[in-house]
Image (cartoon, rainbow, N blue to C red):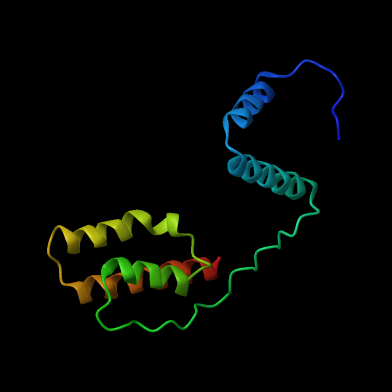
Length: 126
């Protein structure tokens, strides 16, 4: 499809200059991405709605030999309904207490689990 003759905006000129400087493989990738964005914007793409977060925590057992970072990943998966930004300060404090302060690993993980549970219960009671 040809566009009508008109002057190009600065964004359009930058895009054309970038496109012209790419090799054929990257031009095809850029075109495919632009098509994806256009379809997504028009709402006729294949993008599916994200499923709602579960209302109750998932049953993900604590593995043996788990690290503090691994515990945070597991707990974020266990409690997908809890906003991690709300517990970031307290969780990072606990992680630092272990990594920098030498607090025992199991104790810190126990407290992280309690932190997530506490935030879950607070969210549930609202």
